[in-house]
Amino acid sequence: MNNIDEENVEELNPMENFTMVANGIYRSAFPKKKNFSFLKKLGLKSILTLILEDYPELNQNFLKKNGITFFQFGVAGNKEPFCDIPETVICDALSVILDKRNHPSNNIFLMKKLM
Image 1: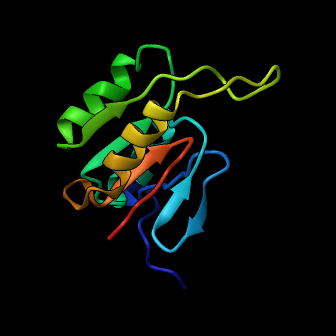
Image 2: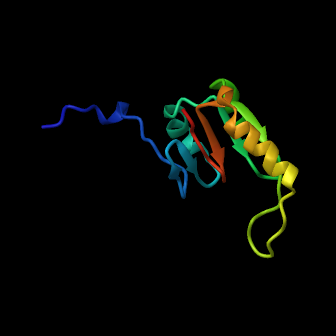
Image 3: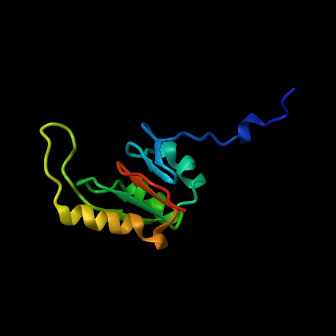
């Protein structure tokens, strides 16, 4: 018999397309409210996104409540027709990703957690 109290079990829902790219580096689709418990379990210090649109207020509140720094580098979508991403944007985003002060980090669309 299992003595787990099902009412007190926290459900963890990873974002769509969540996968490890390399040791400590992940990618995923945009997080939704149902993914917040999963994100919290990662113990993040920062999140980086490449979206052009304003980051949803619900997500901003989650980040603020959990002390997660937010970085946004707006680039046009990656679906056809394809567009060029300015090299400066790529360099700036990589600088954030590689800066150990931001680790562990979770990057949306280029999602990662470096230790």
